Image 1 (cartoon, rainbow, N blue to C red):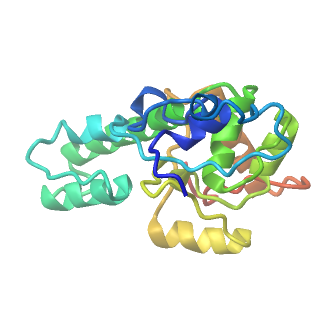
Image 2 (tube, rainbow, N blue to C red):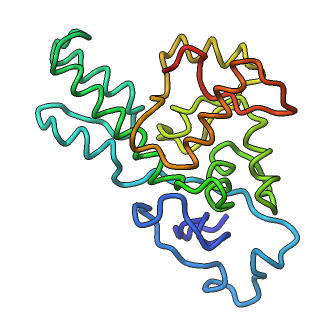
Length: 225
């Protein structure tokens, strides 16, 4: 295996989920090998490996609390709970309520920054495919959308994944148990939500209301509001 540390996602597709936030250099594979075929002409695509960003909306949020030792290598939602505990905040405390709303805003804005806001942009769906481990990347928007919607994944994990991959659960019930146990409820109705996120949330609400469809994106528990 090559030890060259260029961004593998950019080298394979010409785009990177993390954009300017990526800590690896963006070089196309053609720069390293003149005989390498382009992704468009190659019959097979490589598996993409996501790299954690060097900065994020979460980092900016926790920077507002300089006395707190934020660990970006850990789940941001767990770090937020640790922040609340370290400050001795109760849920009804004004400080806790304000911080909770700001953290929800950071979560939604992080989704927008990482995956984009256009539900009709296949590149945005490809970014989700990469972290859900859907390979090779689908060729059309419909195929990419259907592939993502067939997975049982938690939306919080889709945003807050320091390891770069997201677990797809074998059943909706397994996902429900995980969501309740970990208390990973994605903030719905946020003013900063882009078109792609709104589309996913609509699909989620439809699934939990019992709408029949061949495949559904199950990303949160029905009581998420």
